[in-house]
Length: 205
Image (cartoon, rainbow, N blue to C red; front, top):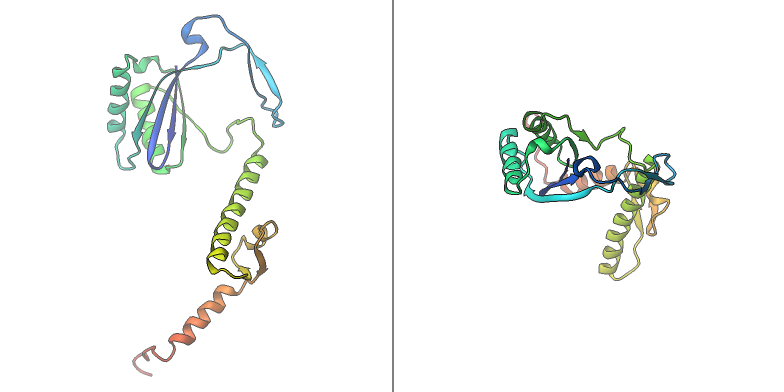
């Protein structure tokens, strides 16, 4: 069986899949995305894995490997599944502090080395598709906030951007009209001028 762990900031989801060599049944053809980066389909002789059981638990950053191990074993036992039935483990995580703990759980309780979803893993998707998603997703986030701010003002507004990535975002933004690399420094100067009179003089001057 394959144990899949999806570690999120709030919850960790566990899923147990029966692989084609678990049931002993006849294999069937399955069409899967290709690994050539173009997304072309390929046919395998393996049976489609079946989800045998799944659970959702709270993600605890401070929980020890033994606490996680006991929790997993108890969940398996309640479903009549033994940890010895798990032959493979794959983990995706957005909580780095938990990754080392789960690695120890896999080694101690399952006697397996887990496969982590990380740079270098084969996904069947070009690394550029992910970049496009991040890029346009962030532009959507920026424009969404700006749209609400402009709507709240009720009048047209001139949007000025600053920061290291401002020039990359502005090219496809619907609202950014100008880039000012010195905007933050000018803001600090203005704050200084507004507080200059009230600023106490240091001793010795």
